[in-house]
Image 1: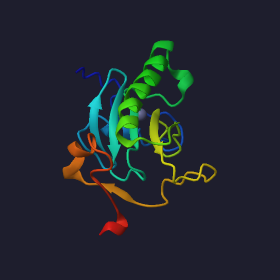
Image 2: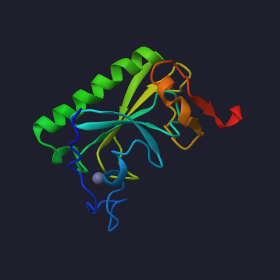
Image 3: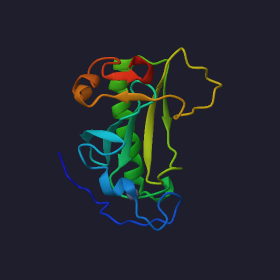
Image 4: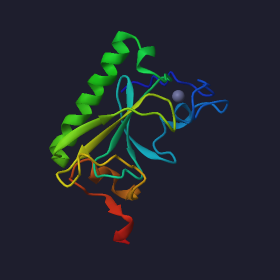
Amino acid sequence: MQSSRASGTGVQCGKIGCAGDGCVMCEDVHLPENEHSFLVSELEQTYVRFPRNPYVSGLTILVLKRHASELYELSSDELAGFWQETSVVAEPLNEIYAPAKMNYMVFGNHCPHIHSHLFPVTYDHDPLQPINMQEQEVFLEEMSIGRSSRTSGAGYRTRNDG
Ligand SMILES: [Zn+2]
């Protein structure tokens, strides 16, 4: 496993969420856990992380190791690597969660550091309903992080589970 944290700290990209404060993803994306997520794996171009509040079972995030805000800032190899690694991670998630469809989302409104959300959509999802990741809280329990990567739905609890 390679440790190529090229991002460093204090990156100021000037985009929303980063203006003047540096990039929070550059600061802590490589850590085993941070305020928002747990590190699952380190790949060549990305860190794979499980959010603490994934909203849906299986939601997984791949964060580019170096700071970039827009896909067009990447070299051809970086761009291909980013999507290749997104695809590589999607396959076992598909096997574990058996979604109706795996969605791939790239936002950056809260932190404009390139990252993709792998969002397994179930048959219960209304495909016409806008995605609101704040709609409910579904927390990934810290102690079940190892189990949840191997078994469907393990490790997740909703606020209503108590
Ligand atoms: Zn960054």
